[in-house]
Image (cartoon, rainbow, N blue to C red; front, top):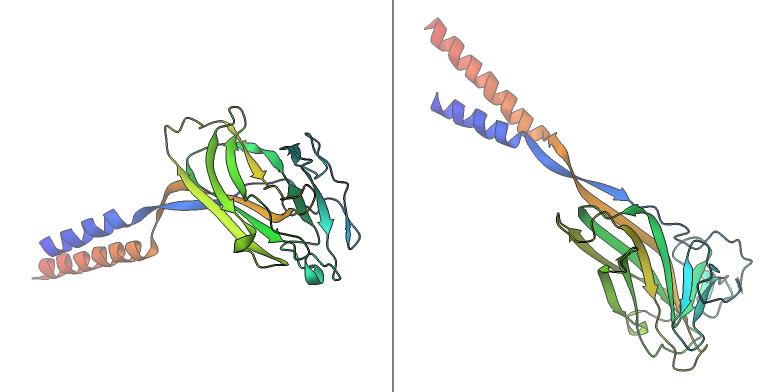
Length: 238
């Protein structure tokens, strides 16, 4: 009888386990496709708080920094074949901050931010690396960041995926703050000489969810109940 009791207790304890719910957080114009560009053309280069890249604000870090969008096209010298990670366009920037305030606030869970950076084949390497971060809009606090993104880690004419993540616990000072994404692009040796390309901005949140039944545990529980009933019937018949 003790064996069956142990089996039932074990099954009940394991019958329900917490699960995680993955959610994609909306980013406006994450692939920089909001403006339809002809092949091998770009939008106007701009800086100083403008929204030349739709949905994103651009701030010059000095030395003529700024950004724009580009549709490289199949004959592109920068990205041969016109291959970009998402859609037809990619964003370009140098010596600039490109950022977006998101329509959500910081909550508990694990945040993951991924961006694909490109190294144009027809330009020299950058003098300084790029970085990106998730930040608190009201305070400017950096919640987490990825730094040291350099052309050395990206083959000429291609893009590479860079990501960062962190778990936000109860008690975090930024909980409840509106959050945003900030991309800080490096500076060229010669102003205007080269740029970083970036595309396919993705932010997800894995947050703890309600307790849900685990099928295998429920099967164990039901089996235990059945065996216990069989034992009781045998005892009654004896």
